[in-house]
Image 1 (cartoon, rainbow, N blue to C red):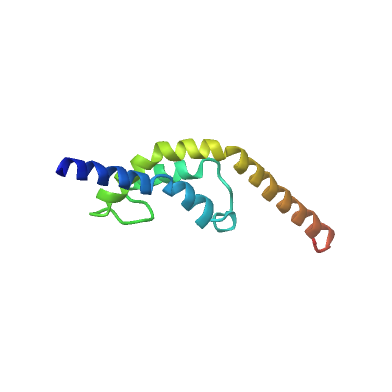
Image 2: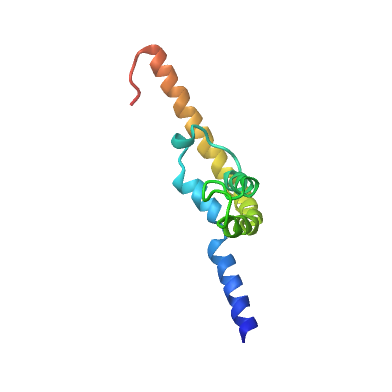
Amino acid sequence: MNRLLALTLILATITLTSGCSTILERVTYSEENRGQLNYYPATQFDIFTIKSGGGLYCSPGPGTLIVVPLSIIDLPISLVTDTIMLPADIARKNKIDKQKQNEATHKEQGSVPK
């Protein structure tokens, strides 16, 4: 019975935390906050978290025992979802680049974009 409970808790944890970086990077942090839009943002965030021993979540210490393993679990899931989201990321980046180009053109001409 204990084995079944442990397996259920592990599977529930993996299921509930999977895709965490994908959602965090696409919803919480906008391009304006970062100044640019990167491709594969959730994968990059997971790698940063693993390399830094907790990243933005915690300083190295006891929290690392939770955050780093969850990031390792999330990494392959983030890689797959980032690949699926790549066409949308490219379209969004093109839209942002076009807006910046229009703003720069209007600024040079002294007019205000609508």
